[in-house]
Image: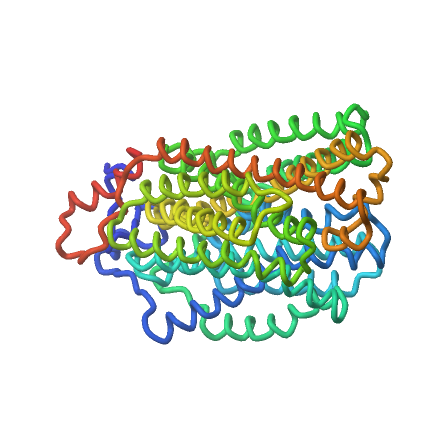
Length: 555
């Protein structure tokens, strides 16, 4: 009897195995159908528009927070307005991957958009701070399914040789959205009300739903895996999801309290840190016990090609998110720029991120190489982060624009490569869960690193103030928005606050530098392999097909 590996093959570079829903005797006659022309453009337009909406929401709340705190007077909840979204994006991504595996992609994608819009309504109409947090959590849950489904749909409808370029374009749209989010949020908060940061999603979400219904069609060779409801519930791994989410909540609470509203020696801070460690370990134990039913199937991470790329995607955002969130704070606090002006001065980072993504997508399509672009990405990002680390309160415009160019193109070169690698080498039945796991690695770093950055920034700033200007009320400094520093403080106090801000920001850029340097190390242990050759299928022999499948297992 033939083994599963012996019964596997490829069709035009796509992997099909004996455990798919397609009978073996029909596989030779079944060729993948890819979208072209208007249909491909319509699907990509839908994907990019929904990605724009979802990614906008990740950053748009940053400049709305001062207005929200003015209404609800809950300074302790400020961290949750941003992290509630990251929490759900990161922790629920693998579950969405499983849903795409067992149900219609169109139905699951539509559900994620609707959940996002419901969250927008809850946040926009909120009458208190907890309602805002619930709305943001729902938005994060919807964002997770939308972003994961967008990348997955590209792998479904586009020819394999076009995927690196299209995923690079998708990443450019994502980065563009996260950059202009604070611009739009600042404009709404200043000119209308912060609630429009959420209401605006409704008139954009309506056309997206219509476009999904009209154009979001999965090719015939992609079919949901048949399973009973009991099996699907087991596959969703609710125990694992609960442990992961609980561990992240404990970490965020500890980092928000420690050194800011409570001392690090406080029992609550210590207890939440201990619970974070225990729950995280419990999560991995549950995933190991669950086997193939785990939301993060550890067997999928076993090949070196997979776990190294997943680690690369996780660490790359340590460098990326720190600059993305704290460069505008540098402009607003140190240089006294408005939220809109700080967004404009951050555009070089976004623009060259897009350039880097497009370059790597094009070159990967031509050379089928992956690892060299991840290595080049890490090296350039390290240089850019090192230059950003040397910024000070008197840095000129040229001095802070130049590093953004280098850093942006560096991050862009490698950011989408791990997703391309894992999708290209995965079997069809593994594409959806692998995409979910990869998106989790990319986004859960936001829950970890953005919250950690806030803790580092606040603690270092307060330490510097306590040492150099003990007469300044630290609570007043924490309660003052970055763009309001120059209006609230004057004279020597303003100089002291600027210097304290700069110390905190420099430490954040140091973290970014460390993350970029670590991606260089990780890239050196990523296997040097070419993507499968997506040339004409008739020229491939049966041995070529088997070798292509075995290549992944050997990684």
